Image: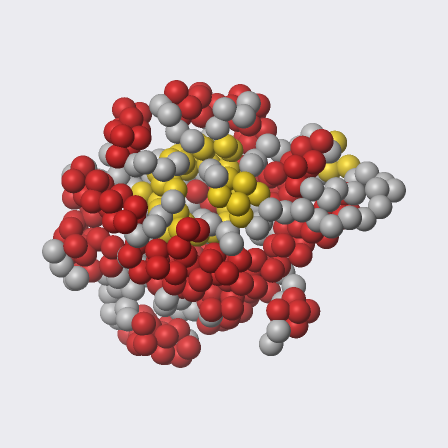
Amino acid sequence: MTPEQRIEHYPAIEDLRQIAKRRMPHFAWEYLDSGTGLEKAVQRNRDALDKVMITPKGLKGFDKIKLNTSLFGNEYDLPFGISPVGMTGLMWPGAELMLAETARKKNIPYCLSTVGCETPESVGKIAQKNAWFQLYTFADWKINEDLLKRAADSGFSTLVITVDVPIPSMRERQRRAGLRVPPKITPQFLMEVAKRPAWALATLKHGKPAFRMLQKYASSEDMRELTKFIASQRIGGAYMWKDLIRFREIWKGPIVIKGLLDVADAKQAIEHGMDAIVVSNHGGRQFDGAPASISVLPEIADAVNGKVKILFDSGVRTGLDVLRALALGADYVFAGRPFLYGAAAMGQVGGDHVVDILKADLENNMIQLGVNDIADLRNLKILDFDQ
């Protein structure tokens, strides 16, 4: 099937989501698709994005759409990239390598998670200059330093420090689905795997999901031991503002802080020498009482006032969502779940197809608005959220 045929048959991310649900075991699906608590933050992201209305400008003619974006000295072909997602190999075996290939081919960033299922060495070879590295801190700073050295040696250009996971959230849907790390092999587990033969065969071929990046530090490939090791290291929960200065000394490239929703925190990040902020509520997966990311984006963008780059993440499902974030002050946009839906639905071409869907929708909506350059999106009239 050609890219054009895929767009005709599967024109929306929701199409891929439905296919992915049919191909993934229930426990893996619940890990990918769920939020936390009553999942109000997940819905809040969607509702707030839908409330962003933009007034079209008429009689503007038609010109070539310009989507290329410069970020940290790199020129990307599109204004959106691939967010870090943990345990990606659980959703679809080898998905991280697939998405790294998509990033290289489409010339967009791909951000590898610390708790992913591949190593920086394997992903860096594929994504090359488009590789970004996401870090959760460890209590042992020797591990932090070694992880960053491995990422730098593997060609990763940008460091993303996620700060909105002080402890794991409850994620009740995952618990009800029986998801455990390591997996508990029960008759129910085996039945779910048997119902998804494509996933089972892909897992046999690629290997069971594992924290391969961290095996070096736990001195074990056993998932039970790795899980205990991660818990002992307070992974993600060891951050303080003073630590950012230390990261600045270690990492020579751009540093991005991911997971801020507060203006004061954004200003603190600037004061501590960070190069960018990701306005994100972790896709509604951490704190169910958090505001929608898009609703706080304009205030943070105004406060930052161009001192650092503003990136956006959480709830993006369409090219129109990308447009909305750019119009409200984001310099760049990231999406996570859509790319995993794509990989689970279509394998290697799935990530490519997600890019094609978002690009086509973004271009179409820019033409509807009478805008041919993403730089001009901020000049449009945006109605209040409650109108």
